[in-house]
Length: 522
Image 1 (cartoon, rainbow, N blue to C red):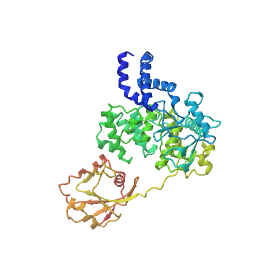
Image 2 (tube, rainbow, N blue to C red):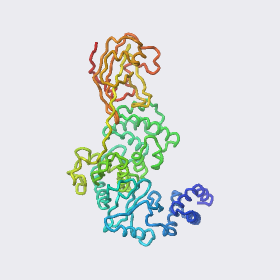
Image 3 (cartoon, rainbow, N blue to C red):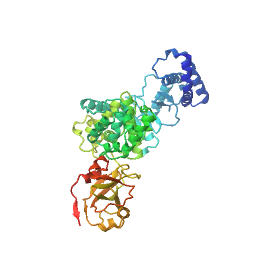
Image 4 (cartoon, helix red, strand yellow):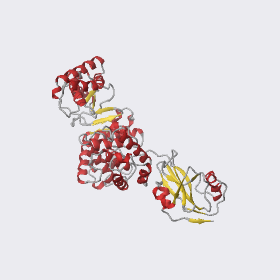
């Protein structure tokens, strides 16, 4: 690397290096000295920099080595390792070391490691919790437990402990099960972040068996992010029809257009960058990061909650803030940092195929010998969930208006369920049953027909659709009209009945269109 190239790249990273130097030393003078020593060491060794190596990572490694050799004797025993950059930094009072034996011995061992007096002590795993990295010394004979109740934000009475031996047995059994039970799926084993993202979006709140044909249709129609970004909204919603949770489709389009436009068609290659994308939460970001980019981020979904709760005996409700934090600690601690994608896929498959919600295969489980739920007879009880709020019940009365082969439909634009999907003119009521006179007196009917009297109609049976927080009960009133609706109906589209299949409807409307159980009311 030439002097000019070195100076240019170093200048671009100097602010970041100074910040890391201070983060390491927590002292302005020491940070300044560490930064200057790093600059000198990097400049004099620039011929050792190999083309293709990440320059920032190379500089961080130099700073880390200088810090370890010259500064870390100033660091107290509560130093924490940052596994992302492999650097040490101080966070005074961030953690408490505790074990079944003498915690003072453990602190002494850690102090020796930090002071460089003990070279053979290893740190086998990291636990990322509320912005901190927690560690445990590796010593099978004495130190096998980490007291989770010492973590800020976790109730002291929880008294969860970490068992290193059990953790190793779990990972070994899990990966062994994966090798014996392959689950071929079109998105597994690939590194294309677009297809991985597409599969994860489709599989949110959706079983694999249901989502698979949708993935195949989307992959065929939109083979890359550019083609998806260019697609009309209605075409995407129609292809999505039947999957439900249509906010996923809206977010998918928004993300596709952001990646195609702002990012030049390339997905962010960091967990933090992926989290910026619309509809990409912690689970989806971890999945893409680990599967596409081999980054050490643990996935935590329903399958993971279930497996960890049962095997490790976690009774904290998984749908509470405290539970989510605790399960996140366990998941990250168990993750195989060298093969995060393989491990993440293994635990999800194990939860889906073996440690199932109902009728889990405990009799042939490789973890039976150390599974807390099996030993305590709580397989059906774990994971625990807090009491859910009752679903809100809503009653929809749809007006299916036929005039000479044409009908009125509308696009749902309000911030409500099924946004951007189509349905018929609708009266929402507080009750499941309406009299025909109540239909005719309703403002929706009057807006369409004025005070025109209803002569004959057909009414469907009730249809029900369960959403996450709502229960929809819908009845469809079909009218054969002798005269048309009012001419000024800008809120509606006038379509031929045979063309209804071109529009994306909520499931409950599709069920009605495919049902023939209408009966005549006079």
